[in-house]
Length: 154
Ligand SMILES: CC(C)(COP(=O)(O)OP(=O)(O)OC[C@H]1O[C@@H](n2cnc3c(N)ncnc32)[C@H](O)[C@@H]1OP(=O)(O)O)[C@@H](O)C(=O)NCCC(=O)NCCS
Image 1: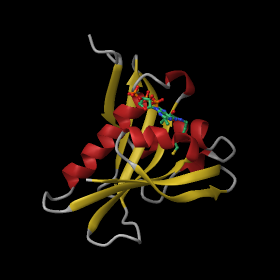
Image 2: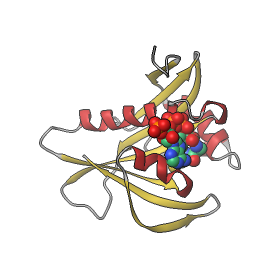
Image 3: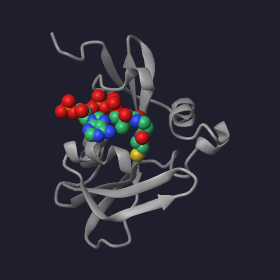
């Protein structure tokens, strides 16, 4: 039996991400502030992770080139949020893999892709685990705290 037998992945609507974005990432803001401008773009994917039938994790990926790169198709990850009681059960990893697969599937095979995010400094290790590398120095995003630019090629 798989270690993560009770986990199920599904694509979800933008509105279904708001509660976990709010409670995990931005409890100091309004629920309405948890909508991102890119949420409803045609190529955007919202991935949801269910544990025993309950939505416990979300993550979003959409097309956005970084200014620094030429010739690669850019995909940006935002709003990775797993509820505290579900962390460490494989949920975040399953979401990230789903988002990476989506970016690859949505991009024509002859193009190179670059997946990136501005992650919180304390989860750098999570992204490294999936082949991302940090670029540049730690930077502050007030009022949230220190962040790192994480980038993955291909
Ligand atoms: C970061 C987060 C999404 C990870 O989700 P998760 O469900 O706990 O992660 P998983 O259980 O799938 O872990 C997958 C792997 O990443 C590793 N990992 C998870 N969090 C890590 C961290 N902070 N640092 C280093 N490694 C980490 C796990 O050990 C695991 O490795 P393994 O497969 O070798 O055992 C989750 O902890 C979270 O939502 N945190 C709070 C919100 C946040 O900071 N989000 C990120 C904003 S950029």
